[in-house]
Image (tube, rainbow over all chains, first blue to last red; front, top):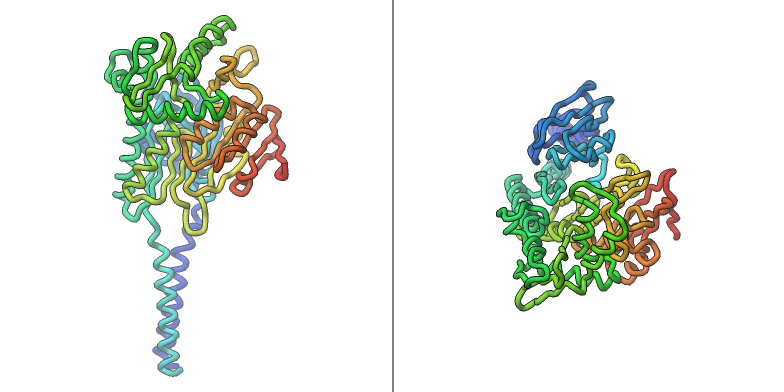
Length: 122
Length: 353
């Protein structure tokens, strides 16, 4: 085996492993959780639940302002100008696939990230 | 190393590299969300091109909107939406004359008749006057038995007269009102899937307020996983379904309800009593058609565990999961291979039962 052969083989091995890393690593790191906020179906905010510090986020919907609370990687609807308060009563969500919806105010928050179910039958 | 061996090693490594690269060409995903039919509808489409995925999803939304307009029961009188709604037209002509309707509404009414027979009257689209009396859709109240009796006289599938040839629907008695709430979302989801298929899509998830239809499978290895919500804890799941090319719909006493004097009153009325059905708190139905899944989940919740289990066992390709008031979970035999039940501490589930 010549020196050139070795270089070519090593280069290919490195390239292959790098390719493998590119393909697999993001999946391993994709534990990242996001709260995707939509108003009338349009994305208005994407909250990174891993880095977001505890906060309150105002979302202006069809009726008025809905307030989201982010705390310790979880998210809930703190208040919303709807008559039924189904969204507020739902409480905290944090698992991929979970959704809080305020139909009257046309606001929704979906938890997105890997490892969860693809949809929840409510 | 001989030239031959060298060539072989190079070929192998190159093949390996190409193989790894090919793993990167996963299909593009587009997720859209719209507020339709008093709920939120989410459609996720996978396609080699993101533009194609988006276009297909928008066409599917358009189809759901079309069905929503045809079946809307509460637009303002004399508005354009009122004119567009077949259901409003039928209801306004109750006891007066037959109304010509779209193929879609005709099909839904025919299916409702068919499944009313199958479910021994538990599925009934004539409960409109009762729904209004209870105030579901507006300000809910508990009506007295006399009022319920009066409205019960205005219900009954035998008083829905369909003329297939003329494409008309006629409610025989004045004051009657159709409510397609137990079928329209399921039907719309089926139609949306049809649109996606026509657009060449073979992989998608449609979630119409919990009426879920999946097209294709998630990938070569996995099926779609669909969580079933715990009827008493929105943050938990009581089970996970693994499905491909099927629909799943849940009806539960927790979806629309109010409480009065410590009693829960939900929107799934028993057409025999005119009052919310008792006994079951959630029923999930899995089958090929989302329309049938929608109908049957409503009907089985009304029928209760024993009668419901009997009826669903006689239907080919229709499976169900029952959750009773006393927190017992039961699955039909055919569902067991598709579901992982996670009863936790709050529920009882016997996998052999």
